[in-house]
Length: 498
Image (cartoon, rainbow, N blue to C red):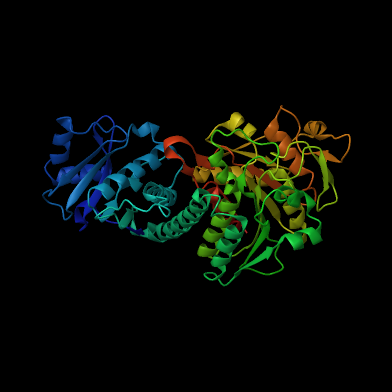
């Protein structure tokens, strides 16, 4: 899909379709009103007759309208203006794009970017429109023998800005929106790939492919022999039940002074999670291929950052493994010594994400990071706490939590800060080791984050539990690509404020 920006009046657009909005009840947006004035009230007469009420989700496609240069005009219902939230705006854009793609308009000029979305300026509306459009058209059909194809698909969208002086900001918004959408697609594709294809080795190979596109990105892959030599026994305790070799993927993006401390992103990469010896219930276990969505989002974010060539240093660390039952698999009650030297009693092998992450987080110390952010589908307890709308945010540094929260608000990729109090450490005490890997039934997402915090005392750290937001179930089953948008925006903000 090609995106661009321009300014200009709707009646002067020589294009396959001009897209304008109608508020509920039957009230025209400024661009729709201008077209109505130039067509002697043709649009308003249709609306008065009941052809379109303006409710969100409604569309009306008009052909061969006098006094315009376009082939078609698409009227899109926008709901009530005072209720126009970010979420509603994205739905409006998605609905318009789907309609155009199904009706043969191969290009269109969108005036929906003029809608007064709460908390969004013109540039943000452009970026959100691009992300919503790409999301609407996304399909994962690589593994289907017969693919659905559109005869005349939508190929080009022009997004409008109020004035010519807004073009520069609009063009930057297009670059950011396209880069982030590309990163989201990478994360979705990786998440949706089945576990028999998307193995730890496959993840490592996909990371390597990016180095052929971006010269300032390098990738190192640590194999199991190297992990054993380093003493990453917590990580290896998870991979011991799998015939697929574990990999530690280290991506290094460098685009500023090499001495500048990098931002470290750590992504949980369990490419399939059966629970190990503590076997999960069979229902919906196929969705455990999504247990590597933290890793997928990190690879997607690095892709977006590299595409934008942001002037910053970023290191991504991805521990990748399967978690399966086997004669060599770790057993409940086993004790391992982590890379940091901390001993861990493994009371539940289905609490494996924290075991691979703790070694990866300790490994980050060698990079002298400015901050470390880990992203993981870590606990079902976070889904119970927050549902499917917000990721759980835990941090040992208030400014970092504040910046991530702001990035979430501006992108709609929202987070909610959870407590990380020392009282929760009591639940992780073990009679036989320094730590237990679970803390009982209460506050499961908090005790998981508390466990990780024990390995992050030497730097500023945040943990994003994305178990509720990384994928959707049911008829819409599929990866969401979250939180690529949040991570990329956070790093853009750091560059802008440096």
